Image 1 (cartoon, rainbow, N blue to C red):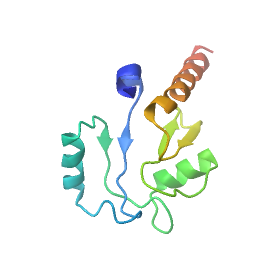
Image 2 (cartoon, rainbow, N blue to C red; image 1 turned 90 degrees about the vertical axis):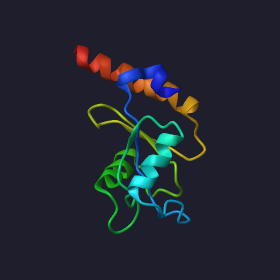
Image 3 (cartoon, helix red, strand yellow; image 1 turned 45 degrees about the horizontal axis):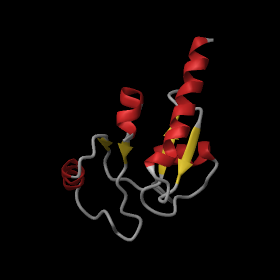
Length: 116
């Protein structure tokens, strides 16, 4: 839905994590194959930690920039502006439809800043 609405302006990345109820015990290749079978068309990264010691630097950045702290469960989502200055976190309960207005606003601001 979001990819259809925003096209190439939106990059969706999945970061599998096994820190929550051991829900991602499989290999990176098996996870990628599962995502492809389910129709996911984004980028599937290698499995990583999102909290605690050894957490991915990507998630350290996301948590700091969004001022939200630790990740409590799988399927948290972040919208990051193209320059990385704006970051907003969405939780497991937030649907893509709920995220769409924020994505549109982020891209609108980015376009306005680029015109200046």
